[in-house]
Amino acid sequence: MNSQEPSEVQEDIRLRVVVIADVETNATQLVDRILVPAGFEAWPATDDAPEADVLLVDVTQIRGDPMAGLRNRREMGDDAPALVLAAHFPASRLRGFLQLGVRDVLLKPYREDELHEAIHALGKARKGEGGTGELTRSVERLQEDLRRREDEIRMLSEIGRVVASLDDLDEILARLVEAAAYVTDAEEASIYLADAETDEVVLRATKQAGERQATLQRLRADDMLVGQVFRSGQPILRKPRMDGGPVKVQTGFMVQSVVKVPIRMRQEVVGVLGVYNRLAVRSFNEHHVTLLMTLADWAGVALDRAALVQQASASRSGTGPITLAPPSLAEGLDEAIDTLDSYVNGQNALGKSRPELLKLQDQLKSLRALPISIVESKAAVHLVDLARLIQRAAADHQLQAARRGLSLIVESEASVPLFPGDSDRVYQVIDALVAASIRRTMTGRVMLQIQSFEAGNGESDGVLLPAGLELDAGQWASVTVADSSTGLSPETVKALTAQAADPSAGNLGYGLSLGELRLIAESMGGVLWYDQTPASAKITFALPTGS
Picture 1: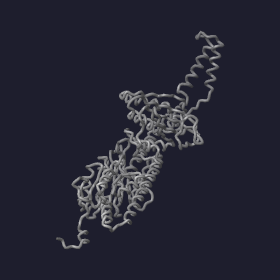
Picture 2 (picture 1 turned 45 degrees about the horizontal axis):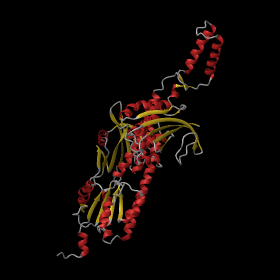
Picture 3 (picture 1 turned 180 degrees about the horizontal axis):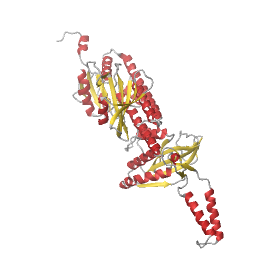
Picture 4 (picture 1 turned 45 degrees about the vertical axis):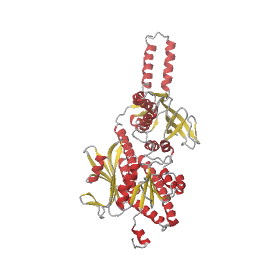
């Protein structure tokens, strides 16, 4: 028999952890890869599992009843304190968690050392050393984590909105590295882009420790991790080695911790965004990778927009005027007037009397006298023709719709005047909305409709606005994509209605997410909204056309 005192024996006993997971493989991985190597005795929640000091509950899906496994343990009399791992959960669930004996929650992604500390803290509470104070601190930590995540989402949304509204490439690069250093609390940040002329990855901008603003550069990348991320398209996280040594990034360049993530433009990797801590001992973790990936998504949108602006600028070499009326109107009227003039003053070859010809000539002259707006081609590239764009979208997706047995219809060709804007960006939104509508519609049809309307005082003179949406007073134009589907998923609707756009939200199954489309629309001063009726689901994209 062991002669040690009970307190001494208790200190030597390793904590026993039983893992409950809604995905069985997750429980096994937590036991084998995280808990047992850290010195815990751990088992998946099976009939053979012993009595636990701590229950670890891994939640993958927050829908339904993610706590069913824990509830079953409670019904069998297991009163061990529980720790929940979840990517997110509504604050309304907090009370239910506490009722099931959940003493702490870690939001994914979490650091392994955070998990170890949380388990030890609950083990102490189990032995009566923590008491209610530990529970109170756990709830306070959870609430602080939730507040921090909300602040991060709001901050990233504002940063993305500013970056995506810029046209100048150098300014975009500078703002990106400054934002990357800020959101990750990094000493240094850098951005690399592929050089089309040399096929090399080039360092374009850096934010150095102690500097408030970024520095623009153009240097060949020597960072070995940059090439790895660029080729693989996968992010990289490096932490200090177990012996405390720094991480080697390149010859003569050692850092304490580093994160590199790919920047994609239309699904193609075009650059790498990275952050470093060279002197600070704090390490980056998986959460910092998530933050940087989100910023990289916005970077892709901003770089795509800058490329389109540059392309449009390069194409403005023509000098001939164009009309905002149908292109041949003025020329046709002039030709008709000249022709009739020859008939009136010469031989009557039309079989009409001279008074009839004079009357027709006067009518044509009256038409020609009407004001027709003439603009040079360099200004015309900034004009948006919605009628042409929806016809183009219908033509581009007609085959895709036919393969699914759907009718793709341009329902209305209402008169919508041309207005200043970026046609390429406008079409990018319309194109993605139409493709996503076809993808989710099983039978029936997809309809495109354009409309011009005036907004003011929270109302409009022809388009029904959703409750709470107030457009700036003035003229607007809209494109509505309606279909006979069952509607959008709750996550996609949330991506449209959330206070701030999240580029990773609202998967449409077609290139850009709905969050990214919303960001593009808002960068042009536009809005997106959603309507559901018993007969159809509709997404409307509206843009201001003038005061």
